[in-house]
Amino acid sequence: LKPEDIKIYTEPVPDGVECNVFSVLPAGSETLIYLAKDELTLLAKVIGEANYQIDSKVWISFPPDKVNVYDKSTGRLVSRSTETPVLI
Image (cartoon, rainbow, N blue to C red):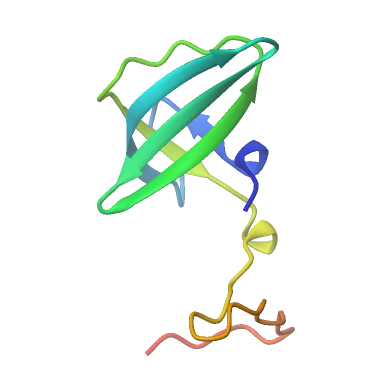
């Protein structure tokens, strides 16, 4: 998942994941936003200026087909399946 694939919303959205804003870093023509969800930290990139308050709640969404999964033991990319995964 690339930082530019993450969309940030200030209100709940369907299938959105609630996160807290950890850091906001203006970087010239873009803004880098670090987000925290439990033990996980994500980086989102927004073109232009973005004003989010530290520790504020936001919701994120991203295209599932943009997520890469790696095998923890080998570090290799797990190939995508055309079948829908079954969750138990």
